[in-house]
Image (cartoon, rainbow, N blue to C red):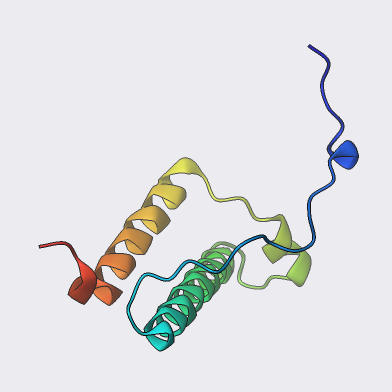
Amino acid sequence: MAKMDPGDVSLPRVSKGKRPQFFDDPAIDQMMTFLLELMAETSALRDRVDTIERLLDARGSISRADIEAYRADDAIEAERTAWRKAFIERVLRMHAPA
């Protein structure tokens, strides 16, 4: 089977159908979307701050290139994953299934 070049794939520019609605009030859906997007951004910023702190601890001074080139090892990724899991559970605790 030949591999497809990703450039050959054409995706539609407009989604079909209506947005899914999970709550009776569409404003609640919008608020939940906002909350989840804000959580994703917070998590990404927290990872970046963690990277900066680790680099500063190790080197004393860093450049933007150092931050962009940094790759967390498995132990650090495990710490970040545990933080993310706790963060999600903390923020969404009122929405946990009973």
